[in-house]
Image 1 (cartoon, chains in turn brown, red):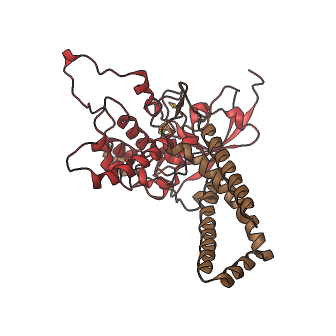
Image 2 (spheres, rainbow over the protein chains, first blue to last red; image 1 turned 90 degrees about the vertical axis):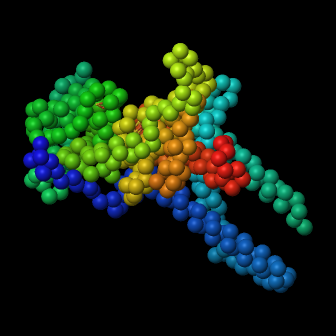
Length: 136
Length: 251
Ligand code: SF4
Ligand code: FES
């Protein structure tokens, strides 16, 4: 037996490049990366708040910058990123919850995801409608 | 039983520690029938082409959990995956990722076994009953709380799917954390506090980054990602309760 175990030489394969191994991992990393862009957008909004506190001229300057073609392009891109982020967030949501039962049956995870996405869409439409209402 | 003349190229990762410096692929031409599993393909190789090939198997019916392997890069049970589904091209078979290779498709499972013992994977009765008091009763609803997590066959496919475990083998990992939840969620069990010292730590549920690929590859629909991530909530609540609960009180 000891002669046998002397021959043991377990080989551990390197993990580098693990994320290229499966498209699932690439989707996961893309989902994680969207949070960085979302943090970036939060900074842009916070900066707007700062400009607001500095008076009307400063705030209008900030608004004007937002209307540049570059900024509009960025917003379109960010909208797509936000869409994917929200979807992936609700996709993982059922994993964080204990099983939910409805009329004696377990609610399937994709249903929970769909309810979440639907709620997000409705809320966003309400906010947009509300904002449209306050526009001068 | 259609035509018997079908063959498939099986590219198998070989590693013989006494003679190979590192693993390499060896290709075998395997004739097969429609109802052949990948495991049967490997058995054909061993019986008829190359008796030096090593791999683990036992039940060949997806219940013992010994035949986990990477099949075209995806962790699967060899006995539950059919060669006919790969007929268009060749098929690549490797040892499970993230574990050291002992020989060919055989991995070293010591780390898994040691961690499994650490979570005390058995009932620790809340109240010990004497024989004359009869059995520990449980309602169907209480059974439902943990049943899904009790069907784990320790096949370790979820470990091969988990980059967190691959990057840091200190992480307890999906299957075992799901088993920890299985016992914690059992109405007869009172061992949660003993298990959660590990459960609350970075080696426990907080080592999980919610990649959730473990749940995709699990052949028994245990959904380890769900077991782990629903515990993050409980773990966080426990953490904050520590500040408001008088010492020695139980929750
Ligand atoms: S949780 Fe699923 S994949 Fe992981 S060891 Fe158990 S049965 Fe296998
Ligand atoms: S041989 Fe038992 S699970 Fe495949």
